[in-house]
Amino acid sequence: MRNLWLLLVVLPFLLSCTKKDDSTVATKSMPPELVVGTDAAYAPFESENADKSVEGFDVDVIQAVADKAGFKIKIINTPWEGLFNQLASGDRDILISAITINSERKKVMDFSEPYFEAVQLIALPLKSKVTKFTELRGLKIGVQTGTTGDEVVSGLLGKTDLNIKRFEGTPLALQELVNGGVDAVVADNGVVNNFLANNTKAFKTVADPSFAKEHYGIAVKKGNTELLNKINAALQAIKKDGTYQKIYDKYFGKK
Ligand code: ARG
Image 1 (cartoon, rainbow, N blue to C red):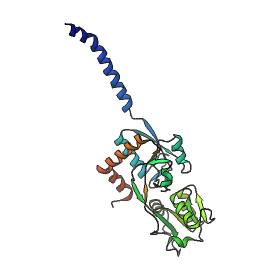
Image 2 (spheres, rainbow, N blue to C red):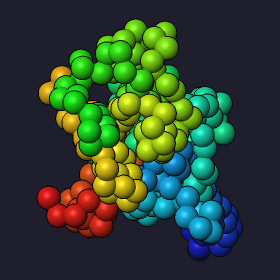
Image 3 (tube, rainbow, N blue to C red):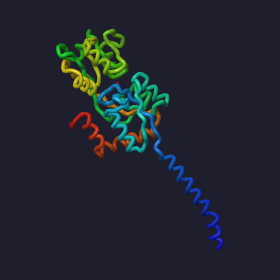
């Protein structure tokens, strides 16, 4: 009898607690919209289409990762210069922009496991006699400012060599090659190949064994391990279930 009374008093309280708990869980698992920054002048990885939305391999990868991890994303086209700062300042939560993982960058941001392998490639006019990287000495070379292409060329010529022509975007550098303003461009293989395939046949590429393999990573603000863990788990899951391969084939054909 006494127990029953107790139950009647305590039960509503217990129920209200359960309710409260439920709503907390619901708020927590509500997918927040994370802001993704990318320099969308980098086809086939990221480019702006006619209606100004961003599309490409990276976009499909980050969307698949977000779907798996259960968060929503909003992608904002963000110039390469300043991209890393936007992450540090919190204006962007995630960067996916064909960003090569390296130790310099690891000091200021955290990277996911690699999701793509790349290498530098030299683009040249068909008539060029250049057969290897070191033969670029004395020629005008176009690069995108602050990229790994800039780094390797700066390594060969010295950072302040006036023959290094720096551009805000890789397509601008490649366009300058088409216009004859530079003798060569050094940039990521995927983007060089894509540009030359879509623009003109009068160019060739030279791969050089001295170029190190590069790996693209998805970046989060330094110390944001919670998000990084989610991204890594989702990356692994989309590799396992075939989603990644589908996206890869869509842009690069079957291996
Ligand atoms: N992988 C190169 C780097 O990290 C170039 C990346 C440029 N990406 C872009 N979306 N513009 O330096």
